[in-house]
Image (cartoon, rainbow, N blue to C red):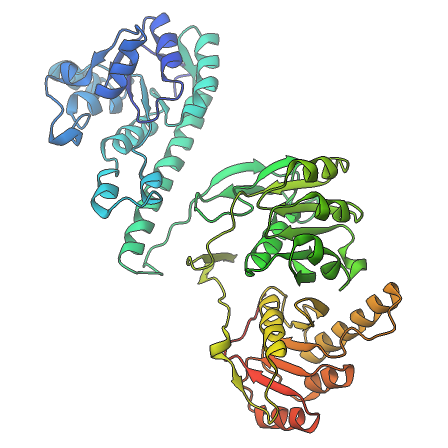
Length: 525
């Protein structure tokens, strides 16, 4: 590979005109001949940058409404020809093809089109053909050709271009080639994914996941692990598009926990607060306002809440912020925060404040991926149950208040690592047992933590008295249910489906508990 190649001729064809004029002026200052397609050529001419239109250069006009512009031997021959092979040079001379040393192209905005409610035909028209072909040709021949597929790369290129008196070093050409192949791969992945969606195919035979690196993180889950954060460009509001207003940079665990907290509060219509620690909720409550919900969520497990992640599904005001700042937290994520709330939160310099502007659409289908050795698992996001799906299995029918609390508790249980148990009363959690190997242990831990919280708060009443219990999966034995009865719970929601369901139902009837089956489990690993 040639160390430094001098740029004598460039071809520019961009839909995104960001930085175009500055780039064109720099090339012109080094006497680079600039070829360009119509739209880019006009922008350059308007800035008094000399340019030759591709149609004049090739002697063939743009046709088919612009579908055919650069797919010409005079273009691709000049890009793909190796400068070190005599046969290639003879072919160029024989056919009157000139070498092209720099390709500047970005692609039709297909990804934007498919998220803009355009019709099918309009989206198809935004699929670029000539652009990817030029980019891939230039990237393949990076031994001699420089390629720019992203305006974000212009400053790096221009710095090297100036430092090398109109040339580009080999290491930069190779780096830009790698970035270009990544861009065209992501573009093709987006097109493939969209076509599958249009056909209603959730799991196509070939699936390509793509993402753009947002940042390299200090480390992963632990200091000896390396990590980075990538975004996939989806339109689901959350951690990926949140604006960080204040605080230190986010870590791997911060991002993971903030996402867990955000997805939990997004489940609820009423003002809701969730406090997350190590991806598990340690307190969740709904109320008439965030200010009212906060102390109710905190009371479930104030010890675990220390250093936790707080998510709110309503904008923060001063009434809420003034309470939240009294507890040490790593992150607060919310749709917005008013001026007074931001001023109060700014007194905690290390607190990260993330604002998303909107809540996500719960009805939208979201797919979730997880890597395994040699591949990855891909599944739809876990769904919630509605009151119409509940089936009463006991003699005692639950009250309206118990049904509301059961749905609340079962929704929270979706976000608790399995085996998971949640006790709730009056739309707030009063005990959570998470991530246990046996269901009975999860039930007992939730009771113990509830009692500990009561002692810490100086309450004389057992918080679980009069609560409901939610279990993320069926009870294999009656022991978990009996734990709830002994603690004072009055109603149970569980998926059902055990071979011992009759035994569990009989135990519920014996203790005058109401129990409903949801018909759907919520394993979370």
